[in-house]
Length: 278
Ligand code: BG6
Image (tube, rainbow, N blue to C red; front, top):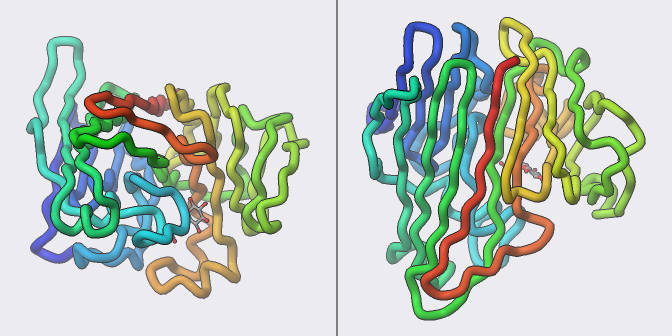
C-alpha cells in the first residue's frame, strides 16, 4: 500500500476491528471473531485515483455508467474526511463518521451542493453502515447510491445467498432483461450481474471468511440488492483483479439504484445496512 494512503482503524478488541481507507471511504477489512469477512483483490491499486478493487466502496451519486462522470460516480474515488474519530461507546460499540462534501471537482460533473455523512459502527460480530445525504443547495436533486460490499469466500461454489427467491431482477448480463429468481437459495456459478428489485428480506450469505461463517444482511431504505461476480472471462480483462480471484468473492450490494432518490432542498436521505456474523 502506498504511504500516501490514509487508513482509519476502528478497534473493539483483539478479534473485532475494521479498516477504512479515506480514498472512497472504502472499508477494506472487517475482522469478526478473528477472520476477515471482506474481500480485497491482491491486485487492487492504491493510487488515490482508481477505485479500490474490493472492500465496501461507497457508490454515489450514480450507480453504473454515467454520462456526467465516471462509472459508479465520484464518491468511491474521492478523498473523504474524518468527521468523527473512532470512539468507544458504553453500549460496547466503536463508531466513526466520514464525510464527503461537494467541491470544485464534483460540481464540474454534478453541479449540486451536498454533504454525505457515512457512519460505521462496529460491535462484536456486527457492523452497521449508515448513510445520510443532505441537500445543501437551492435546487432539488436526484441520485442513486449503493454499498458495493465484496464478501470474502473460501469457495464461491459453496456459498448460498437467501432472500432473493421469487424476486424480479434486471439481468445486466442479458441486456437488462427482466426475470424472476427461480432458486430458493442462489449459488453463483457463472458471470452474474443482477439488480434484484424490492429485495426487502434479509440475506444470509453462507461460508464467508476463513472461518466459513454465515453473514446475515439487513438493510433499511436500500430497496435493491445487486449480486455481482465477474467470473473467469471478465476477471481476465480486469487489470486490478486476479484471474482466479472470482472463486473467492461475491458482491452482495445494498442499493437505491433501480429508481433514483429525490432530495428536496434542505432535506436528508437516510439508508443503512447491518452485517452480522451468525
Ligand atoms: C456492479 C455492477 O455493481 O459493479 C456491474 O452491477 C459492474 O455492472 C461492477 O461491472 C463492477 O464495477 P466496476 O466499475 O468497479 O468495475
